[in-house]
Image (cartoon, rainbow, N blue to C red; front, side, top):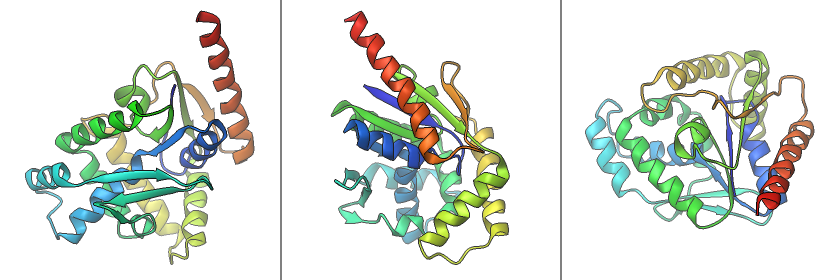
Length: 227
């Protein structure tokens, strides 16, 4: 079973996807973390983000692994190195959207994401899971929230990680990422026609998880009836 959860940054999709995956004992695939890991590799090699050909070459040679720990957390491996904390540093969000919009990079990541999903039932979150990566996913969700709420959530998330950030910096970053993600030519951020839409602005994580869970259980019941 494949569950796709899409939406912009700060809508709550990663937190919800992680909780739902743990409840179902499914593999959790954070596609954004995969792009962040690649971005870290690009930054380490001081590659110009405008050099698409070289970035694609690096993407082909880079090995990205995802491991779900028993506590529900996700371990991200970059060529065998645990970079779970490093990819959440302030420097990463700046170029990640620019790298993620490169067609060759997305094709490489798409194959990797599908390879992960072939191994087990999974919950994936991202921006094009229900529209491009898995258009035939068993259940699709699109989470969104007001810009102010998304900024506040991301700010609190980063502060909890010990990062020195301001609300203005977060607001600027999210605005830039929203523009790039929604206007890029390859796999832009958008809601799949058959996705369940949830406005999480005034909802707690528990409430969002509850609604997602209800829809998933309904889908599982329908599949059992068909079989």
